[in-house]
Length: 403
Image 1 (tube, rainbow, N blue to C red):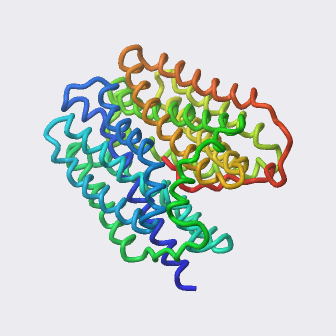
Image 2 (tube, rainbow, N blue to C red):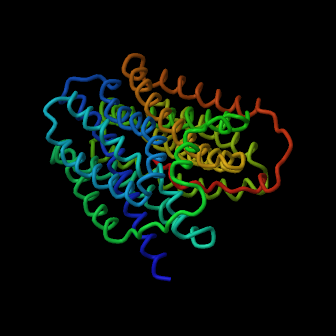
């Protein structure tokens, strides 16, 4: 079947483009702060505004895809986000840069908001696995490549040139997506108007405490994670005296997340979701604590442990939410998990930057550890309830969320 390789290439390219653009400024936050005379909290808005706008837009965009079609939403998403990425280096003020980043977040929302549903419509359950794997890989590669590329070229080219390089890379990926992404088949059954009404019917997605616990893990986990990484560049460059290009190499720790998320999925079948999720959150806390000493090796080790723990927790929580979604509300649960995930990224990253800028690294670690422990308490407090058929063995499968 020719369509499967085409869609695999298309969604992988879209994932690289979208997540490279979304997180590209993270490596150059110190340069933005210096150029626009900002503190770390102010500079962190370059990330927080985009992820916050994505969170606000994801449910409306998913609903819109019921009317105009999912492929069209994905194509508009990748093209518009690249165009805005090419405009970012031209921003004359930080305020104008934030406006562009907010618009870019709305544009990017079209990919994670509808990609999973598009793949299921196109390939069905039997053919979707390979495309899902390609999308996860593309999202991960994009998130890491965007950060690494900007960090490595920021010193010779400045933040303007660094963001332009990432936009150029994403433009190539967008062209690949346009050329390879097949059209969706006509949807059967419910009308598009009915699908639109269903997309905003969120009551069932809030109906179970176990789902609320996973939403809490999504928000607190990613908020802590992004807060630490937003401030990491400032600490490495200004406190430990590391060159910006070398400091950006810490984002190679993301490779640990790819390994740990897959490992967590296998451990769930053996030890259960709750045990693996709690253990993952504890590992994340340990990772944050390891970064406290003013020692480069300890900071790097802490970031590696933190990254592995967070991605494992995210994978388990995401899969748990999908497994517990009430019949007919899987799309709403997926959308709400996405919403809480990116709200946590936006709020946590910005608040973390403020805490670091005003009180220092140790207080940032204390705050993020408290958020993680609160999420863990929510998981433990949530009653187990009756086991549903197949829920205990569900693997974390949602591909849309990657940092």
